[in-house]
Length: 407
Image 1: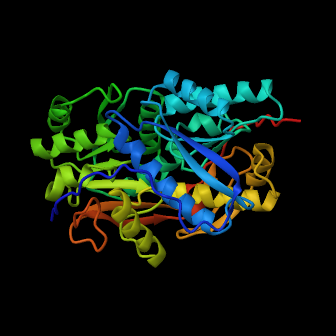
Image 2 (image 1 turned 45 degrees about the vertical axis):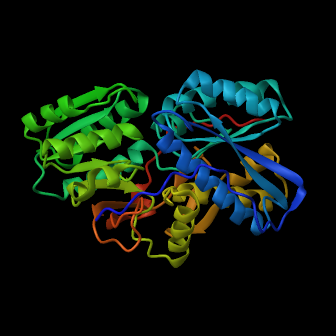
C-alpha cells in the first residue's frame, strides 16, 4: 500500500558525536551522478556514506583520524569523472569511491594507475562499490582497485541457479544497457543458462542506450510478443525504474529477474503491480531481520528520505577502518596492503577481500517485491522479501587476474 512520499532532503548531514580528533581528517571522495537522470543512484549512496561516516568516527575513525565524505558530481560521464578525479587529487584526496557505471570505472582505473606510477608517495586508492564489469577483477585487475560488490558473473551465477530450478521458465528475454556492463550481463546469462538449463530458449536479447530511453513501451511490446516466461535485466538507475514501470502499465505478466530491481523509485512507481514480479540479486534485502540494520534503515530514512539500500557501502567503510587500524596508518599504500585478504563479520556473515584480484567474497540473496513489509521502502509498505540465500562459497568464481604489485 502506498503512503505519501516525503519531500527529498538533500542537505548535508552534520557530523555529530565524533570520538576522533579533528586534527587529522581523511577525505573519501565519491565520484558519482549527484544531479541529472541518474542522480537517484548516486544521491542515496552519498547520503549513506555520510551517515555511516558518523558511525565510523564515533568508533574511533580511521586509526584515530576523522573520516569526511566529499561528493563530486560526474553525471555518469567518464570524461567528467576524470575531471572530478583530478580535482580531488588537487585537493589532497587520496581515497576515491565510485559505483555507477562500469564505463566510468574503466576510465578511473586507468587514470589512477597512471597517476600512481607518476607520483610515488602520493598514491590514490580506488574503492569500487558497484561497477561490476567482471574484467576489473580479471584481465584488467589493478593493485590500486578494490571491489566491494559481487561482479556481474558472480551475480548471474547465483541468479541462474535460482532460475534453473524453476520448471515453469522455458523462454527468457534479455534486455540491458548498451555498454560493457550490459553486454557482460547478457553474455553470462546466455552461457550460464545454456550450461544449467539447456532447454531454456533465449527469445530476445536487446540493448538500449544508457539513460536515454524515456519510454520503454516498444521494448516491452517485443517482450510480450516473444512469449517470454521471464525477463533478465542488469539495468540500473532510471533505466530499471522506467523499464518495469512500462511493463506494469503494458500488462506484461512475466517476472523480472534483476540486479537492481529495488533501486530508488521502483516501489513507488509500481505499487501492487510489482508484487511477486520483481526479483533482485543483492547482498541484502528488505526484511531487515537484524535489529541494528533495522535501526539504520529507520534512522537513514528519517534523516535523508533515502533507504538503507547499500549494505556494501557500510561494509566498505568497516573494512577501510579495519585496514587502517591494522596498518596503524591511513596512507593508501598501507591501506592497500592491509585490505588484501582482510576478513570481517557483517550482518550477513563473514566477507573477505580476496588478495589475488581484490574482489570481495560475500554471501548473496534473492528477494522479491512484497506488500505489507515491516520496514517498507520509500515510505510505503512495499519492500523486497528474501526468497533465497546463496552461501559465500557458492557465489565465488575463479579469477584470471595476474596482479602487478608495486615494488
